[in-house]
Image 1 (cartoon, rainbow, N blue to C red):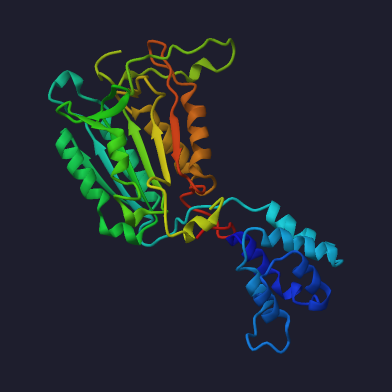
Image 2 (cartoon, rainbow, N blue to C red):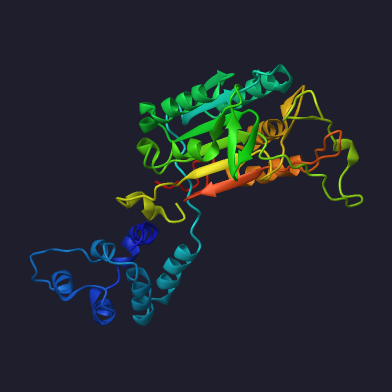
Length: 363
C-alpha cells in the first residue's frame, strides 16, 4: 500500500475501528487481502499474535486499498468507503521539503564578466550579482559568488561545491552561471573567461545521484544565463497584442557592446541516476540570450521580480510562467525576442521556497 493510502487508513482508524469484524471478515477473505496465516492471526480471537487488522492492512500490496474500499461498500458502509476514496482521489500534490535551518540550501553563483578579449566583456553583471545575492539570501540560502573564472577554474569550483559535506544538513542547492555560451556538436556549453568550454551536461552530472549522494531526493536547481546558439528570434507580429510602452531596449549578451506525487520514492533503496533537477535556461535551444548594459540580464531581472513577490505563494514552475509573461513583452532595439526555458528531470514534487504551515509537505 502506498504511503498516502496508509495515511488515510491511519487518519480514519478511530472511525473504522467501530466496524465490527464480523461484518467484514468473510469479505476480506473473499478479496484475498491477506494470506491464510495472516488472516487467521488477525481474526482468530485465540491467536497469540495479537495482530491489529488496520495496522496489518497498511502492510499489504498496492491493491489492498481499493480492495478494502470494495469490502466496505459490500458490507454496507458505503458512506465511509466513499469518504476514503474521495480522500484518495483528491490528494494534494507532493512538495519538496524546504525548511532546513539555518539555511534551506547552498547557492553558487559564477559570474563571468571580464574575458580575455575585452570586446567580449559582459556589462551589467554587477546588477545581476547584487540582485541574485539579495534574492537568494532572502530565500535563506548561503550564497557564494565567484567572479571571472576560466574553464578549469569553473570546473574545479563546481566539483568542490558538489562535494560539500553541508549538503547533508540542507534541503536543496542552486547553481546559477552567467557567461557566454553556445553549442558544439549539439551539446550546449558555458564559456570560461578564457573561452574554454564547460558543457552543461557535465555540470549537471556533478550533482546527480551517483556523484552527489547527499542531495539524493532533494531539489537541485540550475540557472544558465548564456546563449544556446546563434539564432535570433524576430518574433511573430500580432496587432494590438501587447502594449508597446512595455518594450525595453537591450544589448546582446554575446557581445555587450553590440546589437511527492508519489511519496513512496523516499522509501526506496534505489534511485535513478539522475532526478530532482530543475534547469532554467535564459533562452530557447539554439537561440541567443539578452541583457541590458544597465540593469543586467532579462532573465535575472524578471526572475528576481517574480520570486521576490511570490516565493511564499507559488512553486517554481508556476513562477516561471509569470517570468515568461514578463519576458514575452521584452524586445531588443533590433526587434528580437527572448523566452526562458524550464527543464525538469526526474522531478517528484513541487518546489516552493517557503510554504504555509497548513499545506501538506512530502517527507
